[in-house]
Image 1: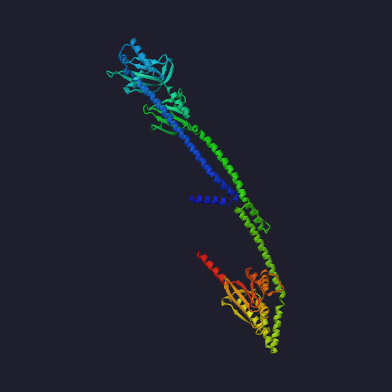
Image 2 (image 1 turned 90 degrees about the vertical axis):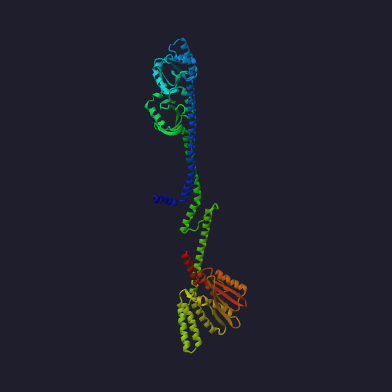
Length: 617
């Protein structure tokens, strides 16, 4: 399962990573905006739901508690009224009198009339004497009552209760022959004050519509339906239809039983499903009567305002997300437009078109990227131009070398013929001169490869020196002081000989007396520096400056020969523009020419050291 989740997350990440930048920004913007808004909307809706439900529950609790208290006070008053015969001596006497005369009838009627008027909802008051005679009083509109039909039930209830008052739940009584009324009754056994014997029964019949005035405000406030159930589980009052609630049959009975199953405390609330609809039920159980006052409120009715607010919240959230999507699309397009333009320009550069330019409007990171791209294009153009110029210079140098070659094989063979003729004529100087000149030509012919060693270059200089000694005897001395470690280094051929030749003919030849020419070498910053120095006539500052400018810029000048310039150009072409010849001179003191080449030993050592460090890391 974990591996499956990881695989799914990886695929989602790869899908997101492969999207274009514009779509990535849209996804990120919408996600960052929609997620908090959706979460806050959910929390707000949930908080509103809980708040409305809690307020409805608290309000219903308060209303049912007040209704239950009102009923308890009403019943308590009725119970107190049942004790009034105990304090009336006339009533006590009449209840024990067997015959019914005018005094008894009048006295009993006046007392019952008084009791009837204690509460407006009392529709009838009954008093049974010791001999089973029933006296009663009734409200206007009731002409006839039938207490004889209920007498046996009264006696049974009173005997079971003893001296305590009894509440008889909702029941039907017959009046005016064929008319029925729904009432509940409070009855009590009347005992003699002197003998404590049972001398009668007092009964109050109370109209069941009493509860309408108590329950209607509850239903109006809670928008639900209130039920009153007695301690035996029988329905006393149903707020929906007081007249028909007893006639609803099995459905009403099943619902009542379902509700009573959750009644296990004196006051509480619960949610229940009835007839395919959810209800919030809040109840209060009376300590005095044991009756349960319960209000059932449809959750749809409670949550109707919440649902409206939730729908408005969802609509607002969708509008905000749609607006965020539009803004994200606009911003991502504005942010990625320069990048798309830069990509198009790069594709044009890739196909060889360097005449492109990125126009950046802003100085942000994308603008900086465009600026660096423009600089890169300029640099590439400069490098291409430099390479083209270098190639032209190289071709020009090669053409000049070809033009200066006069068939070296023919010259070498001719020199060999002259040397053999000189030896046959016993002329050793001419023979040696032609021999040395042949070595010079052999070096150019046999060493046709581009690179030679420093040792070979210096040997070539020595041969050239011996050749000059024949022409200029006792004119100058040659001192070579190059460390052994530099002799194996590769170098392009014919580097030192043109410098020595320039020193002899332009410096030492015009000097009076014996001159000295020295070649030295040393290491400097990873390069090998060679110095060819003479103590000839030197040159003035203007001539020196003109010579160095000619070497630096590669320009031709009639004032100087092609030897130094040719060596300088070949060194720069081979080693790079940072290498080359540098001439230092003072008039009457001498001239010093330095050149530097790359120290292969030093470079190789550094590369080995870097590779060793990388391996260690």
